[in-house]
Image (cartoon, rainbow, N blue to C red; front, side):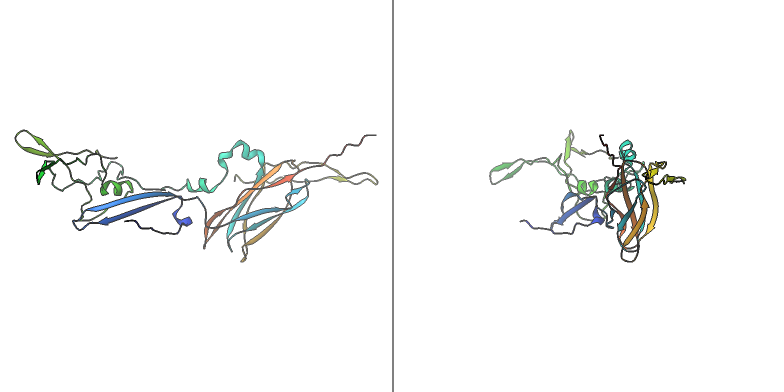
Amino acid sequence: GTFQLTFPVEAAIAPLARMLVYTTSPSGEVIASSADFQVESCLPNKVRLSFVPKEGLPTSNTRLQLHTSPRSLCALRAVDKSVLLMKPEDELSPSSVYDLLPLKEIQGYSFKEYYLEEDNINPCVSLDNILLNGFVYIPISPDGEGDAYDILKELGLKVFTSSKIHKPEICQHYPGHMMERSYSSSIAALTLLEDLDYEITEHMVAGNPVETVRKYFPETWIWDIVSVNSEGNADLDVTIPDTITEWKANAFCTSADTGFGLSPTVSLRAFQPFFVELT
């Protein structure tokens, strides 16, 4: 027969969910199977970040808008695009966050030098031919096949039970009708942003355009910690540096209610228009 199981897929079971299904027969034998499910590395605290506007002139003003779970504490970062091109492995992502977990799955019974295997204490069985109603039945050796014990071991589960979780061991026949158990398995064993003096010198001459001296060319533009309000919003008014580049910004937030969250990386393009007039 067949049946279906339905279970919710949530961030709490990411990045790997392992399911064990078993039943115990009237004779005490345990029949089991397992399956692994890869779960997308998503985070429960949803964070959205955006620049308004998404383009601007050097030294002009822009606004960084943040939305996340109410009363979250968020860390903001905006760096020159070239910084991420030189070290793309330093970019935060849900996968890199999950890779920091000390333990993502348990497997086997290995722990330091300790022997944690369980010996099969059930008596071995002999593979003798069976004569029934004039027919000879030849048993098939189960060597090489798994059992419930192997499945539990693969999941890293220790079970205290009187049920039969080991498959029968085959007795080996030796001269003198001695029997010995056959064992086929072996022992498994920011940076902080430096304060920069930012000074713009403007010379206003009647009838002449404004002349600006560009001096502020940081690699890290924004490095700040912001608390959001009870509605989950926070705005940060900033001035675009003098660098003609594309700025990459992201944020991660922590909340007592929804936990950790990470925003997608957003961009702001700083540009300077040039005009050429032929006379």
